[in-house]
Length: 91
Image (cartoon, rainbow, N blue to C red; front, side, top):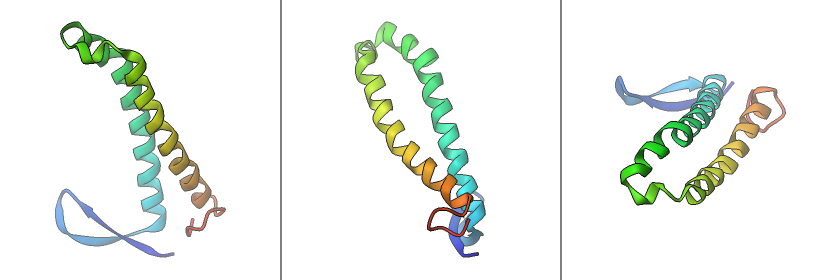
């Protein structure tokens, strides 16, 4: 299994992590981003819209999230394929 260099908040130097750990990190990021966007759309944007006109046009905000969603879904699919040994990663 190949190793990937990764930096953490607790250390400045890069240290190797396994491909499996890197894939899991990527999958957790995708899940977290999706939850973050759902929360923003349901709870944050409506509150901000009260005093900030930029947040009143929900079509624009949702379209931006959808563009991001399309990109990270492709990444998520690729990471799942790698984890299952079907992508070009080490799984």
